[in-house]
Length: 588
Image (cartoon, rainbow, N blue to C red; front, side, top):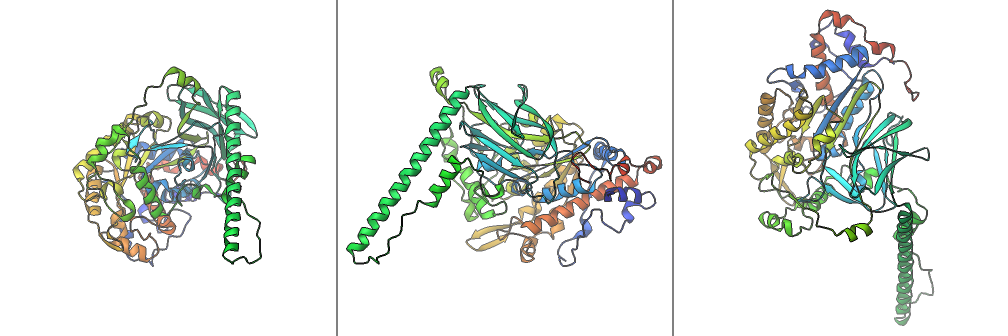
């Protein structure tokens, strides 16, 4: 099947991209019923021209015309990006409509182990007990990396499983190489990749604190187990935990029988005995626990619902964010806690300021060697980079619910550049800002300075990286239980994004204006495109935004193609000869 992007590329040989009447992409985007959406400005705007995009466009040319190389795109944000609906929609268009196989899924993470929502595009499951650290927490005890999240475990039964094609109607991913970023506190536990019931040990890269795995065949399910160096100790501790859980479940069942017996006697004494005696039942949660531990069963629920929140349940996400920010603070953080009152995000309260010093960092207490010797081995995981060697586009999302720009600073995520070195994005799409602007007193100057610092982190890794700023969506501020008012900070933030684009020679996708400007979120909600919290969108709304952004991005690339020298335009894309060929997984 010849991809539509190739058709577009050939079309511009005789017709300017600006004259094309059919939007790129294999979808029909009918916006006639949404007259409040301004499609006339659905473009990537370049306040200082698109010269900075030349390296990105050149790599796209190599891919489209010669079927060579990989193009790496990173989309960074908060809850919009952790849910991975808008970014997932863009990725879907990219991998299905460009010529060739997908070049890998990019960064992934077992979010369910952190008890938060997994991106909607894949599933994650876990076994064992895990601790979490996120860049939005006030107290952070682990060095975080590019994804802004980490999970740690000392459970001998610990295991994670990531299913990349769980929600795809047909297989898309065929990964052959994985780089797991993480470390063992005392070098006494290592991750192991399981493929076809075979253990594959990774090559330990001490410089990047990562383990590199090579799969003997392309796979779309990543199962990682954690092996202690002392295997006998791991087995005995695991058995002890399972025995304890079994004994606990038996004790609970006995208590239930006793309680039912007392209740029945009480009914008899009060003359309420109906003569029917029901057999006492073991509580369902106890049975489930027994089954999970004794049968080593996989979790029954899909991972996007396995955490505390549904992927699009924004009320639940707000509660999770509040818990993250209001965790118990130790003495080192008491002073910070006293300076800033806890915010009840569930009730729609706002931060009085957007302070980059919201975090405190705990240093591990000194542990005697005798205690270390008897302590359980512990492993901390900060991310997994999933790749293959096929030419194509790798589109990865980075987002944590509630994240602000300063939550990706070096103090919070010290491993940021070290992990990004192995991805080196050609294009970064910034969608951070909705949480920064959701404050009583928005300091737009500080906002721009924060972005300057974050941009420098990306330029350290790839000086030629191109940037697109995605302006904030319109939103409302909750002032009473059921009363919302327009939030003018959206307009202020929009101006800041254009100033940043001017300074950094970047592009801007003006989502705020495309939506309809100030107050437009109410229209999106009325049209069943947005959630009742008037900040987030529903599945239909996110998909619509993804379609719009993809159309704008490809239009920018079409304009580039239209201005290519005639000799390059006339060269026959190599991908045409391979578009109908099956890839190594047998997919067309």
